[in-house]
Amino acid sequence: MKSLLLLSAACTLVALAFSTTAEQKLRNCNDVRAAYSSKGFNVNDVPNKYVNGAPLKVCPQGYSCCTVEMEEKLSQQSHTEIKAPVSRLSSNMQSTFRQRHDHFDRYFKELLLNSEKSLHKMFTRTYGMMYVQNSELFKNFFADLTRYYVSGSATINLETMMADFWAELLERMFRLVNVQYEFSDAYMECVSRHTEQLLPFGDVPRKLKIQITRSFVAARTFTKGLALMPQVVNKVSAVSASPSCVRAAMKMLYCPYCSGQVALKPCQNYCLNVLRGCLANQADLDAEWNNFLDAMLGLADRLEGPFNFESVIEPIDVKLSDAIMNMQENSMQVSQKVFQGCGQPKPSTAFRTKRAIKETAFTGRFRPYNPEARPTTAAGTTLDRLVTDVKKKLKHAKKFWSTLPETVCAGERIAPGDECWNGTAKSRYESDVMGNGLANQVSNPDVDVDITKPDIVIRTQIAVLKEMTSWLKAAHSGNDISFETDEEASGGEESGSGCDPPSCATDQDIYFSTPPTPRFVPVGKPSGGAVSTRGSLLAALCGLALALLAPHWR
Image 1 (cartoon, rainbow, N blue to C red):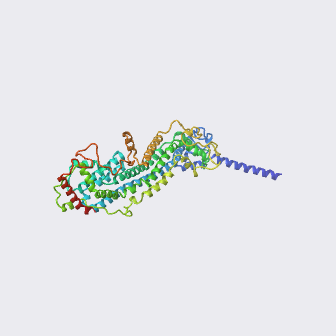
Image 2 (tube, helix red, strand yellow):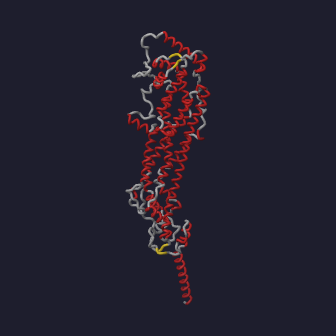
Image 3 (tube, rainbow, N blue to C red):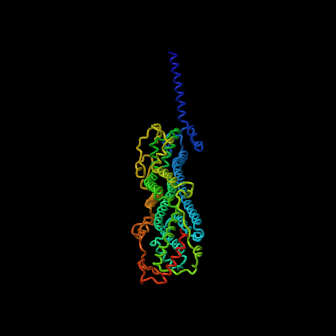
C-alpha cells in the first residue's frame, strides 16, 4: 500500500513537470523571434513571452507574440510577399514577348535590307551603268517600304507610293527604249498619268501591290501587337494593392506568428479568396486579353500562309525583273499606244548611229530565276520558325490574369487538407470560394472590395487592348485600319482589298473622257484619213531603231 502511494506521488510530479514545460514552451516566443529576425527585422521587436494582444488591428486579439509595431512591419512585408510572385510572373511574361518582338522586328528589317542588297547586286551585274544611273529609284522604293514598316500609313500610303514608283519606272524605261526620240516633260506626264491603262509591266504591279500591302500590314501590325504586350503587363502589374488587400495578406501570411505557429501555412481556398479579392481588377482584363491573343494567333496564321512577308520580300528583285522584262518584250506595242495617245514625238538630234544606240539603249536582260538560289535568311532564322515559336508563347499566355490566384496559391505557399491556417485558427476553411473579377467580390469574406470603383489604369489598358485587337482583325483581312477609316469617309475601298473587274482588265484600250495636255487621242483609226508622208518616215525610223535594239533585249 505504501509503495502504491509513493508511485502515485511520483507520477503526479512527473505529470506536473511535463505540464509546466509544455506551458512554458507555449508561452515563450522563441520560434517567432527566430522567424521574425530571418525576415531582416530586429529580434528585439518580439517579446520573449506572450503579451496582451488587445491593441492589434489585424490579427486575433488576446495573448500573442505580436505587438502593434510588429504588425505594422509584417503588414509591409506581406504586401511585398503577395506582390512578389505576381511581379515575377509578370516580369517573365514581359521578357518573353519583348524578346519575341525584338526577334520579329530585327528579322523584318534585315529581310528588307537583304532584299535591297540582292536587287542592287543583280541589277548592277545585269544592267551595269544603266541601272547605276537610275538606282536611286529603287533605293527610294525600299526606303519607303521601310518607312511604312516603321511608321505606318501616317507617313507612307503604300498604294500611292507604289503607283508613283511604277509611273516613274515607266517614264525612265520609256525614254531608254525610245532613245531615238526627244520627250518633253509635258509628254512624259501624259505617259505617266496613264501607267495603269498602258499596262507596260503586265500584271506584276497589281499583284505586287496586293502582296506587299497585305504582308506589310500583317508584319507591322503583328510586331506592334508583340510590342504592346510587355507594356500592358508592366502597367497592370504595377497597380498598387488596396489597403484592404494588404490587411488580408497580413492576416493570411503572418497572423499565425502571433500564436507561435510560424510554420503554419494558409488553406488553399482561403488563399484563393484573398488573391481573387486582391487581383479582382486584374482579372477583369482577362476577357479582352484573350480576345487580343486570339487575334494575334489569327494574324500569325496569316503570316505563315497568304500574307507571308518572307515569300514577298525575298524574291522581290525577281518580281521587279519580271515587270521590266515584260516592258522590254512589249515596248513596241506600248510605244505605239503612247504615240497614238500622246502624239508623235520629235526625233532626237543626238540619234545618229548604231553605236549611239548601243551606248544609250536599255539592253540588259535577266536570267531565269532559280527558286533554289534564295537569299540568305535574315537574323539567322526563318519566318516559319519565328511564328511557330511565338504561337506557343501566345497560347500559353491565355487566361494569364484570371489564373494568377491559382498560380500563386499552389505548392509550398499553401497547406493541404485541414492542417492549415483559415484566418483565425489551424482548421478547415469553410467559406465558399469567390469567382474571378470585380463583380464577384461583393461577398468576399476575406477582402473588402469596392466593386463600384474599378481601377482606372486597368480600364485604360482594357481599352488599349480592344483597339489593338481591331487593328489585328483588320490586318487579318489585309487592310490597314487607318486606310479603312479614311476610305469609309470618302466612300472608297480599303487598301489591300484586291482588284475587282472591270478595273483589273488587262485588255482595255486607252481612253480619257477629259483629254490632258498634250491631247490624248483614243486608240483607233487616225483622224483625218491617210497617214502623212512624214508620219510614214517616222514610223520607218522607229521600226529601224527597234530592230537594232531587239538583239540586245534578247
